[in-house]
Length: 275
Image (cartoon, rainbow, N blue to C red; front, top):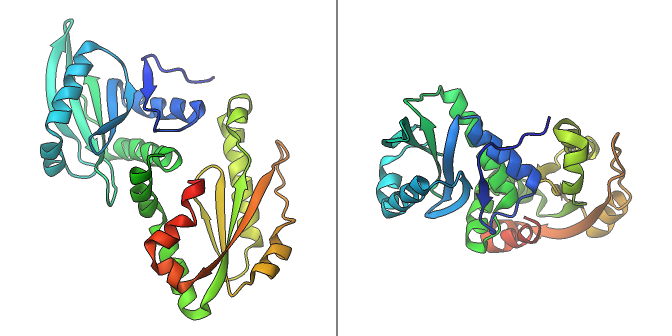
C-alpha cells in the first residue's frame, strides 16, 4: 500500500527530489510520531511537514536562535526546545542534529506529549534524511559542501591509488531517469533495479578499481592505469541486465591525474554536473 502523509507536506524548490522520495522523507518524519516539523540546512528550512499557524511561530523562533541551537546541540542527541498546549493537547518540539562535517543539518519534530525514542529510532531518521539530501540538494553553495562530505572517502582512495599509478580513467554511467517507474513498480522492485546496476558494475570491476554510487542515476568506476581508448572499448558495450525493464544509460569518461584529485575544485568539476 502506498504511503500518504496524513499532514500537508511541502519542500523548497531547491530540494529537487522526486515525488517518490518526497513521500519516503515524509514517512521518515511521520514514523517518529511527528504531527509537524521541519528539515533545515543551516538557516534554510527545505522541508516542512504540517502547516498550522503555531508551526509558523515555531519557525520564527528557530530562525531567531539558529546560532544558539547550533552551539548547544550535539549530533544524534535529541534536544527538547519547547513545549506548549494546543486545543487541549500537550505538544513538544525536539531538535535532532544529523552527522555532517560542514553543514548544520537538523530537524525539528513536533510530537504529542512527552515522547522519547531510543537511539536506533533517531539513526533511522538520520539515514533517511542524509540519503535524500545526497539525491536532492541543488543550490550550488550547498551542493559543493554536501558533495565533499559524501565523496571524501572516494577521493581519498583515488588519491592513494594514483600515487602509485599516476594516471587513470574515471567512468560515469549516467542512468536513465527511473523516477516515473518508482510508483508503478513499487519500493521493493525499484530498489532491486538500483542494486542490479551496482552489482553489475562491481562484478565487472578489475582488482584495484573503485566503484562509487553518488545518487540514483550516477554510478562511477575509477580505473587506475587505464587509458581513455582502452576504457572506451571495454565499457561502451556494457549491458545492465534487469528483471523489470531494459535500462538505458550514458557513458562519460574522464582522464584523471593525481593533480586533479588533489585539487578540490578540479575534482568537484568531475561530479557536479550529475549530482
